[in-house]
View 1 (cartoon, rainbow, N blue to C red):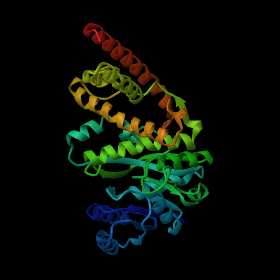
View 2 (view 1 turned 90 degrees about the vertical axis):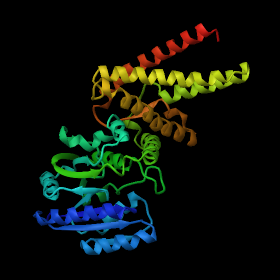
View 3 (view 1 turned 60 degrees about the vertical axis):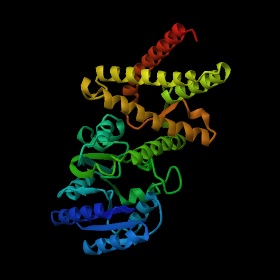
View 4 (view 1 turned 180 degrees about the vertical axis):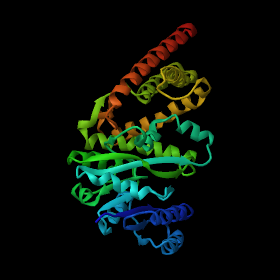
Length: 373
């Protein structure tokens, strides 16, 4: 028997959940297979009543537990009664034929999972134009041009239940309820068991931009993803490589050096030098990446690209700080491999970064030479 257990971890946002459950209800009408919907709620008590009422309205099974997202997904998997488990976030809506398209992927027993296409909808704010220039959105679009992937985001992904259980389910790589990297981790573990994750571009989910495009939330998410990279490197050391020095590390070194100069020379002007270097380095990186078509856009996009590079520092600082917090400095020079072709593209990025570092340090040296400092 085929069929899908749809697992939705929820924390707040009942207005989003209602749209999701309504879209699932419509999709069920066009689905040839049994579908059950399981909502695992960790909201505050005021929101809990609204969420429970929505589940009753749309005939979804409701469970309340103050647990993290990984535990919620595992709980939904455990109580699910159908052979395929589909995961979607509460701030999404599904297309009418989504479930049929996921089931199509499981004709081959070697296939352990299927990832579909996630498209973002809603108002394009100034922040969203910056987010589009960052690599975070690429995994949501992998199904457009890849046949198989090592992992996929949990906005639109399914697994055979037996394979999930064999892999011991999701694990919170950072511990606690704050998540990051658990989707990468489960994908790599399922691949290590000899199963593949296929892609289906016809399996579509629509994700609202609203929950991604708030500045404080995006900074927190970016920093958390950076922290998670350290834990992914610890769990999967076979998937790391020696990378070009991080901008954040060079900036930190210069900052410490010139803070020392402030005390030696009694001049606060020295504190501006690391920031000047950083802005020059990021501007050169942005120009070269645009010229070499590593980032889509034209010269009018130079400002969003520069800001995207600045936000990338937040990710790097998350990794650096987690290395320091864990007293594990040996991983500072390394980068985690998220895709099979990453090292090739990273080579081009590395050349650009190296030239930008050299150019900006040379410019800094000339300025200091002229100023006589």
